[in-house]
Length: 234
Image 1 (cartoon, rainbow, N blue to C red):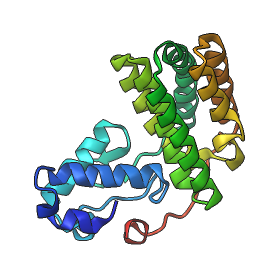
Image 2 (image 1 turned 90 degrees about the vertical axis):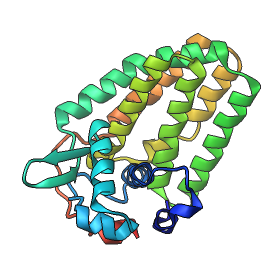
Image 3 (image 1 turned 135 degrees about the vertical axis):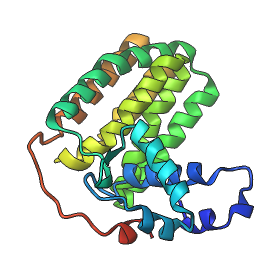
Image 4 (image 1 turned 180 degrees about the vertical axis):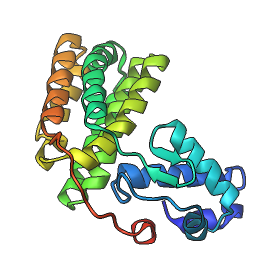
């Protein structure tokens, strides 16, 4: 999100500034422009987005609620760093829930739903072609969230969305095989099964896809020097 949009409240008068900052930071985290462990200084963020520290503080607390940010007493806010145990548990939970979601989506998907999923795949492949892996990852997550929406199970969908947000952080830390982001036909075959109303096949394909993503993680501790916050966001 362009910080300039946030600097001009009149452009979107009905939109609370804290929600704008929350959305912009969420996207930056999902696209891996800011990395796990990076400090999110209130003064620096206020300067970047042209808002008050109060607005920034509200946004950071919202991100902490989503488990994307870790607020530490007397130290400040940091992009969350999922542990190895977190990584395993998140993907195991996704492997349990999302095949069921895919099966339900196959029973309820409309032609409009299928067209939207196909557009997600097109946009994801375009990002990969441009070597924009962060955006491709974000779009892949949105693809899975859209399937949960189609299944029309609000409670489960909210849980899946939370798991996918945490998956983005896990992938930022432990990714070792970018090709697994979207194997050549993984999403295409899944959409076709949903379009065909084949719930069993959709569930099997979703399970296989998630197991492959899980296997692409290098679940060992890693260190990477973060970029500066300003360089990442501007």
